[in-house]
Length: 437
Length: 160
Image (cartoon, rainbow over the protein chains, first blue to last red):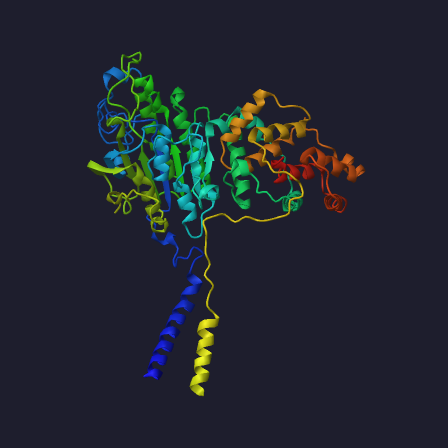
């Protein structure tokens, strides 16, 4: 009996050791057996925050006509009481984004104040924020960029993750959080193009000293000597993301190239729209340049021109049309970019809506302006998931209340194949499975 | 006896090679090095920009220029990359007042001491003087711009 037990134990342990010997080379540093990247739906996600506060009434409900013909199907002409305030845009006869994906008509921003930074934070962290959110601080919960870079095997470099905002203010701080174990180390490249690609940028950044490769080696050797003698980590007070050594030159070259292109006049009217080009469109233009240059796996871009609605309803509608045009242009660029075409899923959603009741300000056409102060209507938004056939359900409209802002982060992590690697308890939203084949 | 020997071997095999448990706490690695500089405070963005401007051009940056550079600084996320690009542009302008190569090679000791005092706000120790002198003297390609650029993009330059 004793001999039998010993033999069994021996055989069991030998078998376990054998399995371990075979599996060990495939166990990743993270402790997982297989890389998460094997379970992706697509290799690229572009999330367009159709921000600034957009009501369903003017977007999917089309109560002022179809102001977003590139996004939504429908031939309704622009309402007569705003038509005179619309800048000319080229007619669009192609397939709407809605027809190339799934539209959640009744999406919700359920909790927290309907403030722009709250809405952005929620969309990028997958967690609602409350009144105490500080606009001078990075979010407390990890952003989608950090989840993406940390929970991929191997971990992804910063060139693969970009956050492009159309204004400064608190938005630069949304590329990483203060959450322990995440933070700047896993943050995204951030850019606010309208400030960087400017006269000041041209003056300060476009004509650098060029060093030969021999000089570069000398610099590296000297800098290592200096840094080895200085124990503090650089940037302690200005914690920022850092691109790897090999990625710095391409990024610097990109900035220089864009500055030179701008100085040559190529960005005066890049989409041939005359005077209709606004800051949202420029923000999308430089997002397209980033996409064409780096083909990032995760890109987030926002637009905020519609927030003029606090004082000018007609201009809000005008900017809504321009933002719609920009999103369509972005999708066309993605489809014309090798490496991104047919391998990218675009998600579009406002950060929050606007109030049902107007304020007291009338524009020149007699239309009353709208704020966003957390009433029920300001929580009603749409969300659209657009992508290739075989990945995303085509031409699907979900009309009942389905999905909320905190679902976008889990959905992106699902598309890029790392949802199961995010520790439990970090995200309360769900994957928008209805959108996928 | 054979059984005892087999048991002994098995005991060694299954107990002596037990892998140590590695606990991972969610904090970033910290490299511990000796600090001989006495500097404990990182420069703010405004301090960094205005000090770099003074070090390169020998005069004070105007408030207007400082505001404009600060905005540029906010507009890009990788601060180290942007600082590097800013410094490379600053030293490439004709009004940059960096010592010439002739000045450097005419008195390397003096160049090193002056560079440390100007950029690091301290005197170099013997090892630092020796190392820089050696690098400059043994390398005809080493220029004053290379030395200044390397110092201004080092970690110590970010502190005071």
